[in-house]
Length: 319
Image (cartoon, rainbow, N blue to C red):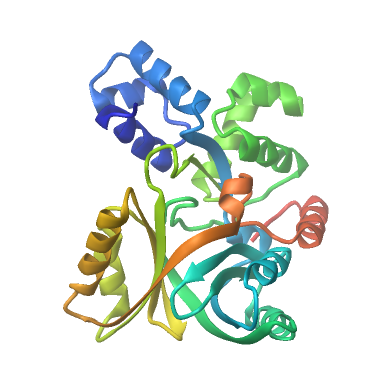
């Protein structure tokens, strides 16, 4: 049974997945030994996974599009077909005005237009409406951070891959994996994190912590959409928020433990004085959510990633 201390530890690990046990202990007022036992229990129970999340800009996948689909006939097989595409990082069957939604991560607007054209050509898709994100205000999984241009080499890439699988791997273990001294491995990891290349975070399993209800929402508002989004970002349960243009001014997602909390969350979203239109959709079945499937989210299509790694090895730089 999770308690308030467990919840506090999970929040701290979402912010810094490599926080020391002593730092975590200082934050919750317990001994280092007690905190270490709690974190290990959370990991063993599957309540959290601590992974490294790669910044989208590292792989040139800086454009995010949220797409709402109109579908003729059964929805599930169409969502599965959408989810199979490399550019799709999230796909779900939904209850609401549209029967399915998806998130696309691509290199630029031309690539987004190309991907949308191919999706719209699928026989069962009767239409698709797009929100093009401009600024991500909140992202529980990958954090909102600035990417600095730094030099990177094949050893850095190998460290990134290990951190994507296990964000709390010890420096000694990382050193053994890539053939460096412990001090050298630590120096490289700290540099990659400080530059925003990778964010070490705890991915929380919603069903384990009782967050069984998931919804998405699109808003239109008057005035400054960023100010509205920052207000929404302070609400409990909101996991993602982005401002942009297209069908909505703001797109977001939220989780709740039960239907009553879900209703409360929707009412709170509607209460914003500058919110002029609210559209809600419930995630009935999530077919693809890359940040739950691996630690490499945002993630590039495999071919694009291989090309970038090869380029970085030749040039010794990213950005």
